[in-house]
Image 1: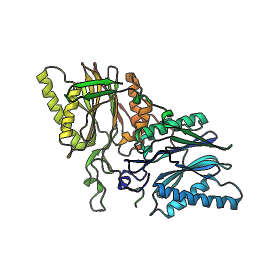
Image 2: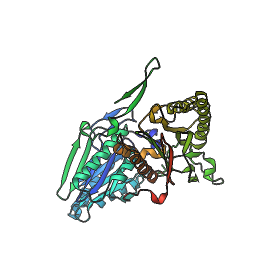
Image 3: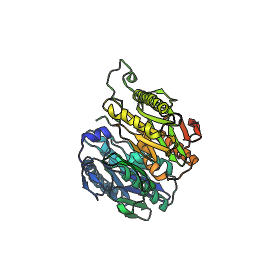
Image 4: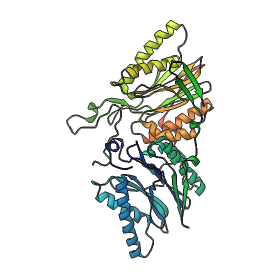
Length: 236
Length: 233
């Protein structure tokens, strides 16, 4: 998720991460992996935090170039706190998303960062917004992003249901992250999840060894050939 | 930076040039940008594919049959360049038929897979072909072999391929369990292919399924309006 290498221009501009956000009955779950890598060859950080708090009950996940994303969220945090002081009320989630969108759209030539903004406000309850690379703003009940997200589109389409309970949504998000981290080599580490409801914010961190495991990792047939060309079948 | 207009480097396709005199699709190679999959079950295999063949943005064939018989009980699923995969499949069908007559018995699936691998590896620089070989033989029952671009050969109980396959890795990892029955495998294949077709622009049309076992080959087509649907958002 570090420097802009030509790899990312060929692969598509989201690199090195898996982020997601989903609405459930009464709140949102926002999650990400924790790996920062240099082009897939070196893991520069195993425990980076990609979920940034931009206000009391509004969070933001970064994807794309880490430097650009950090700069934009810093600016957005400032704008939002100023805005909430002026309005004398906590900002709306759509306000936070719009601030990010303005920054991304007006600087689209220089920036290479996409965001998922999610949170809770008094007017519209739990919401998830996606601000894409060029500065599009779209509200969705569930959204995924980053390079690892391509592997879980099918899973999310099949498994997400509106009005899930908190536990169901947490399990769904955890499974999705684990599946993506299992297939994408530039996503990994721990799963950082944040649950935002009317009552407040709760952080859930699931280390790598506690992530859900799926059958294919335990069962398989492998055909190996030793030096003399004898075929040997292994089951594990 | 043309946001949103970056084309994924798909096997066989090139970035479109700016000339308006000649339509885009006449300059693109015909590609089975696709979703294919094959699953082993106790007693046979289930194979499936979508039905879309594209030349750039134009759908050259919307009812393609990508499940190609190589022998009575051995099939292959083709992805990548349509021309390359057809040529290789024709070559292997000939070689396998000859081999089977020499042997005077039905050929092994592993033999068919090795023939594919031999061609795909020898001509790896010129070819763009990802193939799944699946079938049934008396020695090892149902088997699935994966021969991706480059010419590797590996046997897997479950394999997906093509451009649409990236979107269903998570779904397959979580929903496949060893020891499923034939009908469960068919349902899994139909669901997975529908999910991929919904997300991948190069996959679509109808879902073609086939099951191969000792009894023979059973083919099925699921039309667009009969496909499983998911909560759209």
